[in-house]
Amino acid sequence: MVQIRIMDDDPDRVRQVAELMLPVLRAAVTLQVGDDAEIPNRRGPGLRIVVDVRPARPGGPQWEHAERVDDPPPGRRDPRTLPPGPARRQPRGAIPR
Image (cartoon, rainbow, N blue to C red; front, side):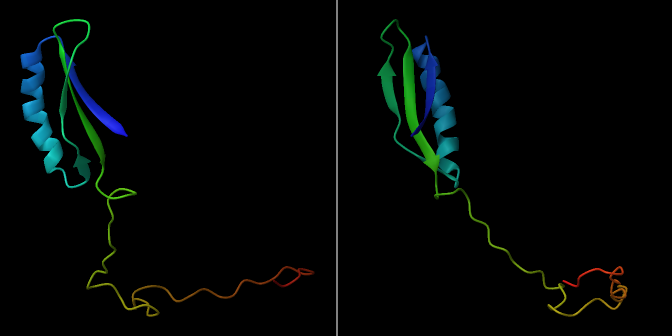
């Protein structure tokens, strides 16, 4: 589990940053953002806001390959390209593959 923590000695400052940052994280289509939790600081007047974050899909974003309309059909070559070169000669005594 991945967590993002916003922490400071000033609770108002922590809430202000969280109000600015959390909507941006929740708007990201590649992330799932859990509910935020306020946790008081045990050693002083500070505050922590903790939120769980994970990828929206397992393995990250998925992209599909789309062929361009102007791509030549498979098996045909562009007339402007050179023809295939001559077959390579095998050196004397070489075993053909």
